[in-house]
Length: 207
Image (cartoon, rainbow, N blue to C red; front, side):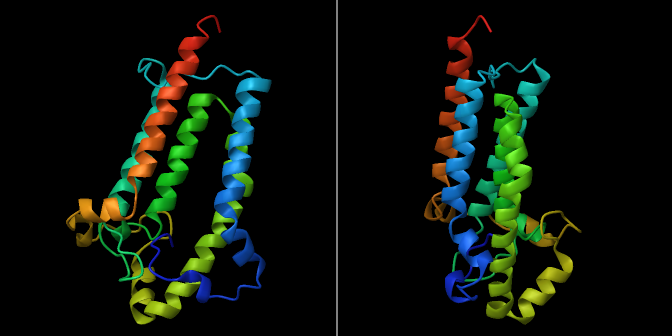
């Protein structure tokens, strides 16, 4: 679970492969994903789509996934109180890992905009496996930390897909928590990425 409700490094056996791979997931994902994008844009020279060409179906689909993913992440970050309580409201009333859901939607969106099928394959393959280890590791820690509360939460809430709509979904969103969780970084990165793609497209009008 992506709640960050626990100091997960102390919750599980640090000698396991799942622990090692989850600790390295951000670095491995960033380097691999970035390398694939660079290869696609500068070696294969696939022409990226302009995210602001709303009449182009694939560009609109890509932009929509990025925006929806960013919205889910921001909504989640405004509900998340790390290491304090088990987050069960807002998007956490729908799924146990909304931050991960939002992140993957954003990545899929950028892959569509860049027409990067190598990166898309990496996301649904190796990257998905790495994050699966992380989810399992975090949930193991949460089950120990919150015990009966966690059991009840799992029974009514899906890991990545909603099972039902809980009234907690309407809980108040907090801008303070959003800032505290530094979700503005994801927002700024998305804006930078979209503007870069727009510039990249405009710089090569002949393609």
